[in-house]
Length: 480
Image (tube, rainbow, N blue to C red; front, side, top):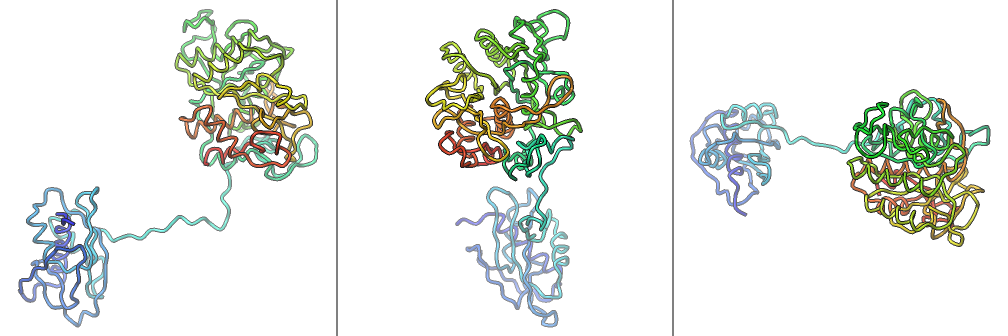
């Protein structure tokens, strides 16, 4: 291998330093052939700053090895480097092809010469920029105490068994099974969310004034609030927090509680000393109201809400997920086509499997049974890892299970309540998808679904009843 100039420079540096230490005793010119990167050192000799070698004074003691990293000053002439290195007695010299001017050198000297002595000697050479010991590193071994997970200061955190199940009593009912949750505490050590990710909640609206939600509400910064003008020209006046397809206006305020409850599970603000925490501490929630106060809505209004989401995505809003805790009606080609249009825009469609304890492989439930690359269907489980008594299922049509019984979350009027249903399981998975995107924004809807399915924690009660046969595991979905 052709010798690098750095090789010769490092070798010369050692000669000068050792000469400085030992002094000039004899002048017996000698130069070693440097055809190899491995050098054999003669213990009877020590390099000197005169670039010549002198016999080792036996009174100094036995030889001792030191490893150093040397950097020569930029612009040092090759002739000086070669002369300097060519007269050094070293055991090893190596250079780094992609890190210019650095050399590793192993030298042998008297035990009476300390490492500090040697380094000081090298620094005295005007051609040397710096010298360092060949530091040793160790892996950061874990402490004997297990690392504490990231726990927010939200006062009702213990009520969220879907987030952290330690067997606690829930809603005045017996405790669950430790660990039956979505494994988000470990995931929070990687990320607690990203306020650049927008999740559309297609539901009864969102109480955007709720203290646990308002900081995570999506805000249309191109719209001036309450001026009665369509400032951004999208056909909707004052659509600051989203769209109301029922009233065909820009106010998606919830008048039912259902949508607000779903929104809290996805993204109630974390560590704010208020109420609960969502799967994401930080996220942006867009209200897409198409269900009226009685919880019902029309196909047309559903299409209007989806259309709004697509239009805003094309206008630059980073909406990546629609959370859909609703269902009913027969197959609709129009709704199916609309969902496919969402897929073209890179928007995941998370849907509740339904609450009629039915096998949706035989009796499809819509929209969760639509076949599209961006549809993710969610069944409900309880805190004992059993499928909820009401939950639909399907070995080919339902992807995964998630917490959906006695779920505590936000409701209108600055309040909180326990709700149950696949409607409650769905926002858990919507939140999981948003957290995955916070960790890796490049994921497509199909990739998100594949990761959630393949990394789900196996659950006996879901085997043969969902595609994954398991419970959603956000940490594994993010890391495997």
